[in-house]
Image (cartoon, rainbow, N blue to C red; front, side, top):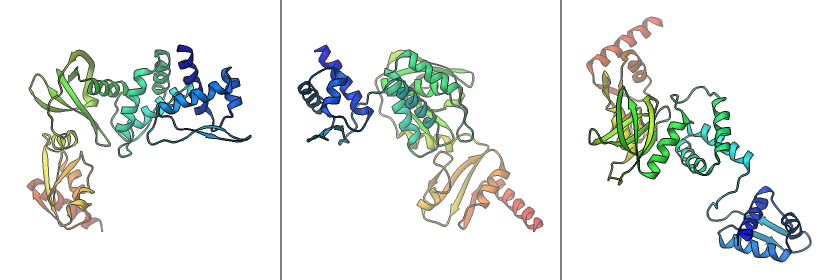
Length: 303
């Protein structure tokens, strides 16, 4: 049985290597008869691989697309290229791609041999990108992704404090990455920025998942309600769906037709408000009204 299993896996690798093979070519590659090839093809079909057969002198076998994606066999070069691409994509800004790439990378990293994992790390360490998100080490993402999947507590230093948490989900807002987790020390849900974590370690403590709020909504509210120096509330005369398009989800939120966002610099906030393409009214804070008025005066003098 071991010989049959190994041969079936080799057959699958061959079918993934090029679009079409004749039965004779496959038999020669594997050192078996055409009849053995037919039996092995049926075994692949039973496992969910859509192997198509074409009769005639020019016929052969072809691995087709099915209703679901079956497991793939990757050689060393393909595995390294895939892992490097996923690492880069996990830090990207394309909607939905970052988190999906992170999940796929966690699966690949789990089964990748140590020698290939080191090759991937070498390539990644020698690669830089510019623009986009805060600097996040991929090992941090991988550690947290596995801990969320396996329901394992993690421990790290955060603003010079040691925290032990039960991670639920990693959430990205395009420019920053956050972890939603149950803080065992404070006995409450908390949001943590990944770029502020230090000395991250996975423990052996497996926890029972708790009922939890929606991770994206919770992180969004935590970030927008963070202790900023100023918290702006702007009533905008436009439909809520159009108002939501004005600001990234983790930079602010919309309640009805009121846009809420925080900031530390009134001048920057005034510029942002001035760029709103709809009629709007500043509800608070009063300091922002003054900053916008000052900006308007400066612009008037310029022209």
